[in-house]
Length: 213
Image (cartoon, rainbow, N blue to C red; front, side, top):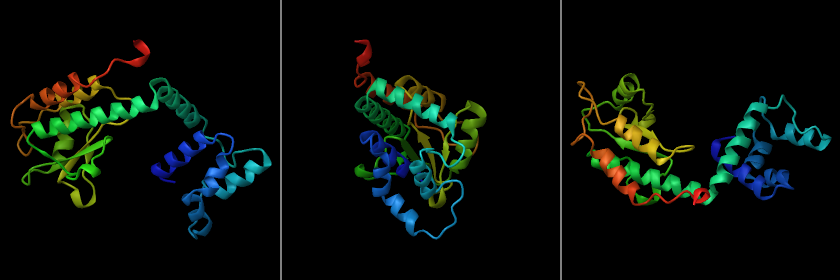
């Protein structure tokens, strides 16, 4: 079950707390499970449904630590408010894209409807291997960036801005990665340009924290 399906199932379960398995049976992933001929190890909807009917719920050793982690994550979401979480990610995504633009680079995603508020893929100049940028960021700045995958391997690096991340942390990675003067790496048009662009935008768009007003 991929992350998208997992979130879809979780959302439906939260909305229909008294009938979560009805949501499972109605989902596309459950229908695919019934017709799939691939071998299933450790996770099988049929096993879960069988044991659920018996009243034991878990056919395997339950991942208690993951459930506690999920509980803690949901508490954070509920405390902040889902609408506020979505708005925060929109701000962080916009600030990141403005920083990239200020660096003189382009977002791999060109169409507005494809832009993501969870990750930004940055296209590097044709004479640069983005893998070297990722390596250099990790070795010199202790900064973890994502590699370009498949057709864009070596052509882009990815900046994640999803989860328990606020504006201060977002601008700190922009500050930490301002380019590198090492041969084979890219240097922005102006050192500090990304920080300035991101900070200027955030300065005018960060609301007061609702719970602290």
